[in-house]
Image (cartoon, rainbow, N blue to C red; front, top):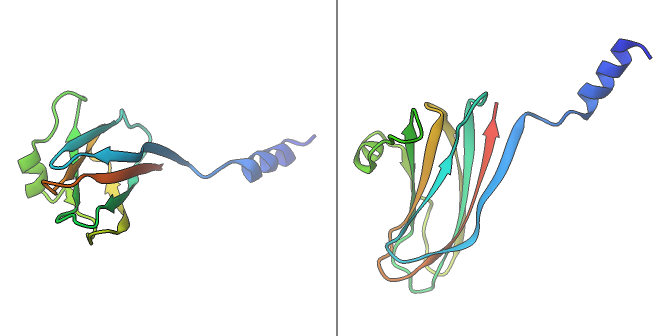
Length: 136
């Protein structure tokens, strides 16, 4: 078999360079609570797509917030206040009694990231699913 033919077979069967991970599936996030998901170390990737799905109670009054906290070493992370000031967060749309899903692209600026999911509602829990797709 010629080398060129074998190379063509490998290229034809190689999947795109991505890594999809499920971090939470129908996780019940208590009222006024935070769930931190550590992602890393991240190597040979340039970014990730963060997808979050949140289901809210009919009498919920607020939604959720996803904050990205970066770290150079997996120990020392950005503070919540500085992450907010830098705009390293997003808040999916909210409507009581609905399920909302949103995806955001996040660049890698350090090898470690914490995805901090905050339930802004002080009375009702939210049901959360979270995925990341690592892209090269």
